[in-house]
Length: 142
Image 1 (cartoon, rainbow, N blue to C red):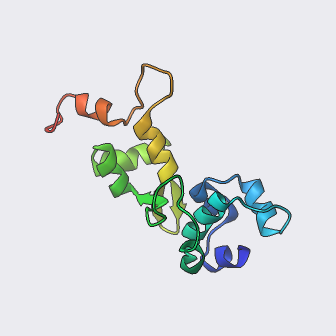
Image 2 (tube, rainbow, N blue to C red; image 1 turned 60 degrees about the horizontal axis):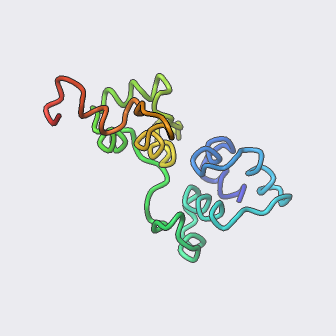
C-alpha cells in the first residue's frame, strides 16, 4: 500500500484525508500492524487507483465504486450551485474542505456530502447548501 502511495507522489495525510481514514490508522495499515475494513480498503484502492483491487470489492455505502472520492473545485461548485470563483475562494478560506494534490485542489466527496446535507438536528443550513444558495438575492436561478 505504501509503495502505491509513494509511486503516485502522495503523502500519508493526503491519502488519509481523501479516503476518509485517520492518518495514524493508515500508517498502522501500511506497516502491517492494523487491518483495514473492506470499506476502508475499497476507498484506499480508489484513491490509489488500484483498479484491479477495487473492482472485486463490494459497493461502498450502497453506491457503485465508480463514483469519485474527490471532485475538482469546478465540479464541487456545480454541485453546490455556486460560481467557480466563489468555490475557489471558499476553499482558500477553508469553508469548503479541500486537499492539494500536486498543483490542483480536490474536494473529498464526504466533505461535499456534509456541506450539502447541512448540520444535523439544527434548523440552520450549511453555508453552501442548495437551499441557502438558491435563496441568495441576485441568483438568476433562484
